[in-house]
Amino acid sequence: MDATPWAGRDRVARVLQTLRMRGVFYCRSELTEPWGLEMPAVADSVSFHVPTVGSCWLSVDGAPPVELRAGDLALVPHGRGHEILSSPDIRRPPRVDLLPQHFVGPHYSVLEHGGGGRTTRLICGVVAFDDPAARELVRGLPRTLTVRGDDPVMASSIRDTLRLLADELTRSQPGAEAVATRLSDILVVQAIRAWLANEPAERDGWLRALQDDRIGSALEAMHADPGGDWSLERLARTATMSRSAFSARFTGIVGEAPMAYLTRWRMNLAANRLREDRATVAQVAADVGYQSEAAFTRAFARTIGVTPGVVRRRAQTEPDTD
Image (cartoon, rainbow, N blue to C red):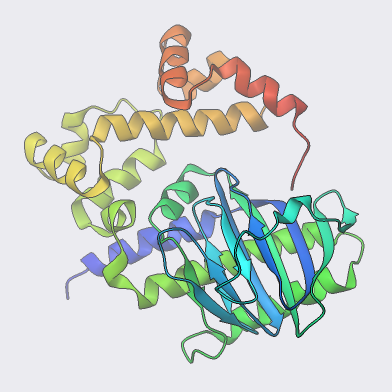
């Protein structure tokens, strides 16, 4: 039996196991028709929306409006601004973050809004990924991802997670934000897993590369040892291909050259270390394969857009959102 599909599936499974998020914001809304909410763009984030009572419409630029009914789950994976509406003909709704609302905690609010008609209750969340693998996975998702509550493919585990999340945020117990963030981890992974199982034709880029027997093995090797002495020749050997064939295939699937991908992967890992650890810039540089701190700083600034010191200082001043 050909083991390739299973090897690719195993690599995706391992990425899903590592997905962890930090909650940015949660909002529980009671909305009466007519109503509309503009959700502002939040960089490097995934938004999710779950109507628990009634229905609404999700509108994202470049995609047709999608109706959501009670029990449906919708993800907007790419940090894009979007709108949630009582009907698709609502124009220029107010920004949700500018409306008066009751803040239960620094990252959780309750909103009441609308014209007094039929009621829709909605749970919304904005969560962010720091792990580079998670970011690459999310980049490969469509503009919107919808899991229907009445879809027979929708596992009971997703419905159970939705119920737990709704209960946690509705009762506003101590520690609700922390529990909601962990439940959101599970919920988003479940939604992505359902999409992977049911929309194979839409997989492209990094997801397709991860499941490719040869390119996927090279990707996994880089991820497992980001500080290794990697060269194009060594990566090609890992993929059991010639250098030219490997480079062409990698670039064609992933969308960038192998060494450019490796540099970006290393710099994203380094940025996480600088935000979260007490390691020095020299230690982080060595961990991602740089013997020279100056060379690392140049590569970091070129890739991330700021120096390592700026990332560290920002992390020291930003509030904890987990």
